[in-house]
Amino acid sequence: MERRVVITACSAISPIGYGRKAIVESLLNGVSGVAALREDELISRFIHSRVYGTVGYPMTYDFSRQYRKTMGPVAYYACQVAKDVLEQAGLPREFVTGGRLGIAFGSIHGSPTVQRDIYRIFFEAKDKAAYQTIGAVDYLKSMVHTTAVNISKMFGITGRIISSGTACTTASQSIGFGYEAVKYGLQDAMICGGADEYDTITVAVFDNLLACSTSFNDRPTRTPRPFDRARDGLVVAEGAGALLLEEYEFAKKRGATILAEVIGFACNSNGGDLILPNLEGITQTLKLSLENAKISAAEIDLVSAHATATKMGDIIEAQATGAVFGATPHVVALKGYMGHTMAACGAIETILTLYMMQEGFIAPTLNLEEVDERCAMIKHVQKLIEHPVRTAAIQNFAFGGVNTSLLIRKLT
Amino acid sequence: MTRQEIEAEVREIFLREFEVEDPEPDVNLREAYGFDSIDAIELLLGIEKFLGSELTQEEKKQAIEIRTLTQIIDYIEKLARIRGIIVERP
Image (cartoon, rainbow over all chains, first blue to last red; front, side, top):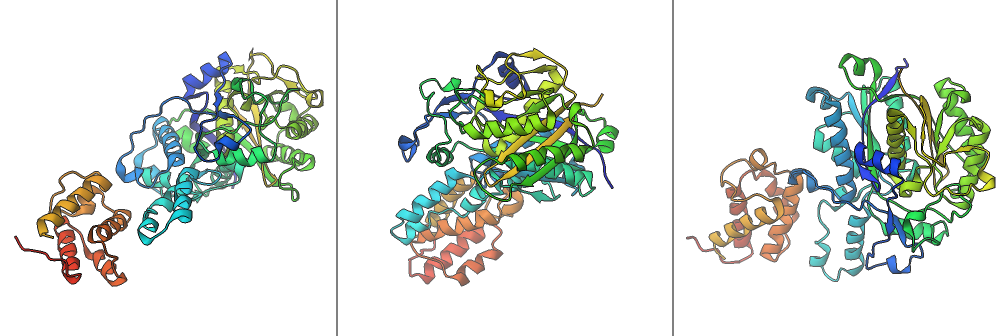
């Protein structure tokens, strides 16, 4: 049994804004969410990259203590966007708690803020009293599936839990696996997404790999620069995104607003090097998503590229995209606006693509001023254009050699 | 240590850790305030700190039956007596 799957609600907390209005305004006005790296009084002083995609506006939450007690910062983000999509969708309470709604949600490694506090005790505890300051709930706040289970607790959701933790493909896998769960009748709806909180450890990891941007430390908004000749690496960022996927007939019957249909998904592994991008693996993923959707490459209007602005990653992605989709579809790299939101990027970039689909424009890749000739085989968007988008591909690739491609289509 | 002091400390823990102000002494804590297994573990840690003494596994298991604030105070009073901490009846 294969069923059609549609997106009926979405919400993002991103460095360029929270909610549709703020995010669309940022896209239309070329606003960057990259700011100076905050000092953590630990390792930040050693990090060469001094930029971070920052949620720099105040967030206010209305979660009671009953829920807050098991939530670290990453779960606050996750629960807020999940709350937003449930409110937007207006699903009846008995459906939300009835077992046919599931959750696919993750983060790259739970809450590093809480983990850091635990390890501080681990290394510094001199007596039992100090050891006992490790809170009973610290694991619940920091574990890798903390986002998914805090969502389930807050809303009483009793369906299946999928909590991918595959770095940069966490959210794209969440959407893809959620899509498959609904498509094959395992669930009737899924809340899908990812979140990551402000974290300097992630910056340090990429910084030590020489993968972080360092040349624009004094001009944070000028980086990252996907596909640009002067790109010099990624910018780590924070944020969250959630989408509600529903079975088409179910959504139609209840009069839900359908934002788009998920028409295909593919995920594969490079089966080799865990860091270097792999042309063969990525190319294969893009082809598999077309096969899964049963559409031709010519039907793709817009590609949301993963494009983190690393030297090799962008070239490999451009080559794979050009080889599979050709030079016809417009290509935008949304990380130019906000950096790499890690576990959230697949969801945030899908949501921004949905917004552009709804509004009828394509935002340019921010900071793409001079296209690297090695990335020139695809149609880059360098100026804001009014353009209808019917079918879009959202591609994401992760450390560990994991690749995903998600295809969505506006219902006509 | 008096029973009043125990009650004052428990109320302080409830306010500080559980954001419950002036809990009713004899209501079911789960039903009235959403007190759950996580809170129970935090409470036991708070009791250990208050008594300045670790609870045995057996003593912790006895806490499973607790449902009300009065029962918590009774429980701590019993632990205090076992430990030779003077508890004066009012």
